[in-house]
Amino acid sequence: MARRVYYRISDRPDGCFDAVVTIEPDTVVRREGFASLAEAEDWIEGLRVLMAALGAPVAQADAAAAPADVETGPDRSYWLRDLRAARS
Image (tube, rainbow, N blue to C red; front, side, top):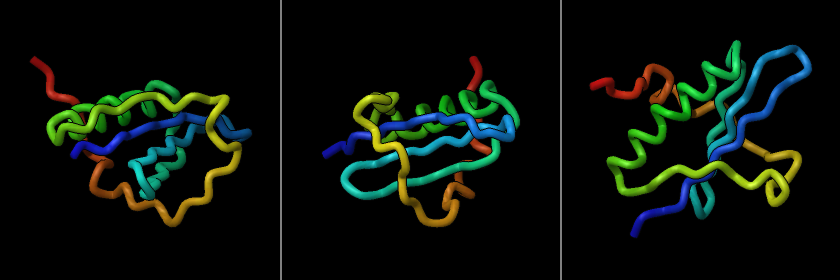
């Protein structure tokens, strides 16, 4: 059964961006320190490609329903850092 995957991009006071990805029921991955919103969105696009291949489409989390502070462990996204969307 495919799991639901949601993401949220937030901006930080220092001008960088963070991406928080939730894979239901209980996995949270946080990637911190994107230099630009475009860089964060590119990373999310790569995640979309990977998760679609696994049958788990990625959707943007509803900001109103998402908690303000998400407790996460260390950045475990090392396996996604270099992921890029395939270009035709």
